[in-house]
Length: 146
Image: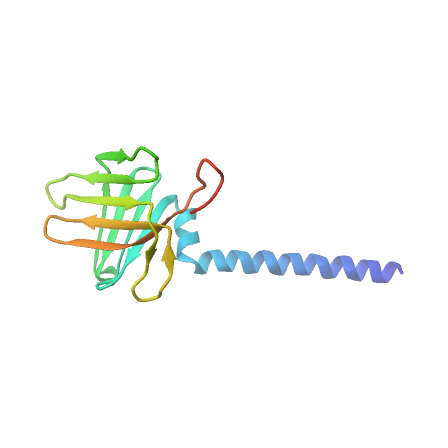
């Protein structure tokens, strides 16, 4: 009886260890979880050409375009927050690449994968704009991730 109990405890220990390692590996493989761990509060992406944008807790924005050929990281100059707190406009005003990031609480379906995101994101440069879908990566006031 004692041997069976010891074997059960050992089996439970190794099962818990395996599940913990599997969860850690999933977090490393998931770009959304990795971004969250790096302090990203909002992340969005789009297609043709592939792009992504991340808003960091330190109120900087990273925009990557053309599948990584162009990457910029800049501070946010100003933020407009809509009446319900869901919609936001981030303003980046500088001499090199001024742009805006508009986040709207509206479902967006990815044109290639079909995935539905809870937010629509528009990145607007003087000469070009991009539309895609995104998620909030931190808990909201009601305790939910979007």
